Length: 248
Image 1 (spheres, rainbow, N blue to C red):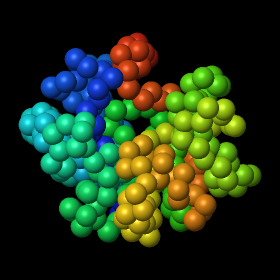
Image 2 (cartoon, rainbow, N blue to C red):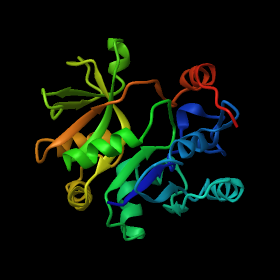
Image 3 (cartoon, rainbow, N blue to C red):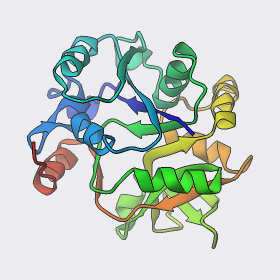
């Protein structure tokens, strides 16, 4: 089974202005290399990987083209331009996933990865779990801080790790499990993205799609053990730079 990966890198990162006003967040340096390069490094030994599509926007396109030109890897990587120029006309994360799938005629299962996160665990374990279950899978992690949970998608699993409750950024978290921006969608689920968007649902925040999806079909949580940071603010960027160091 071949899997395509879509790395989301088309956001405008307004909370990090002025740092990201004319420079993309996934290319910010953490541990001596761009955030997205650290993600690519985790994919070097990714079994069953067909191709990586990095979705960016028209404003940051040249930055990603330069990055790709200088990246040393044997992986097949293609930069996809969603055509947007600002926060006002952005497609949103879910909109970008659908755009890439449609634009590149992707028919394989898709591993969706947020391009602004750092983690120290292996992706192959999530892929193996997806193949075992033959169902959609999202990575989840344990967070003890209740206030921090309010900024994540919160997940409740049954004894088989099937999602039985999911709420994006709840005011009163009902679980200590938070969803990561690491999802694997089956071919059938890819087709449901169009339905989700045509119904007028929120095109941003991938967790909104899972919130809509899990009552309709089985979605499983894979509990990832390790450190993960979603870089969204100056504080989380500083935290990432303190906690993550990588060899070149």
